[in-house]
Image 1 (cartoon, rainbow, N blue to C red):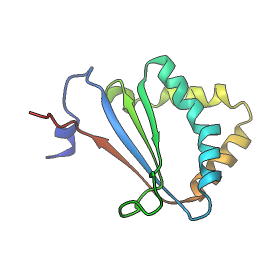
Image 2 (image 1 turned 90 degrees about the vertical axis):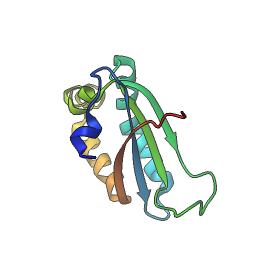
Image 3 (image 1 turned 30 degrees about the vertical axis):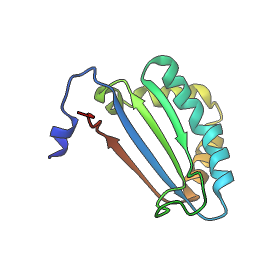
Image 4 (image 1 turned 180 degrees about the vertical axis):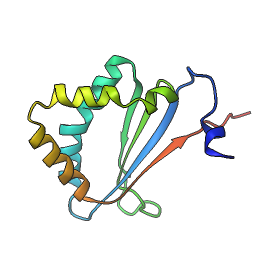
Length: 129
């Protein structure tokens, strides 16, 4: 299936996207702290505005679960595909929530320096029957 086909559907159908992060060994707590301080408030504001319908955050329950490809994951449910493509709200929110843009950018750079890998996966629901 082509990407354009996977994205096709009713304009008002919600879309879940899993965001995977593999944090460098020994830096998990710092990554989570930076995520909660600098990224979660943006997501929370988007939840209040209706751009996001749901925010979930996960870590593996036990050390060494599975292949260990990820150490932190968020699943965001967007209102629809259009809201994913339109990033203007995020840009405005960042300026409103973080007046000290220099500090915000420095901390976000640090958050991504702590990663070994990061990838996003749009999810397609599978009907039970």
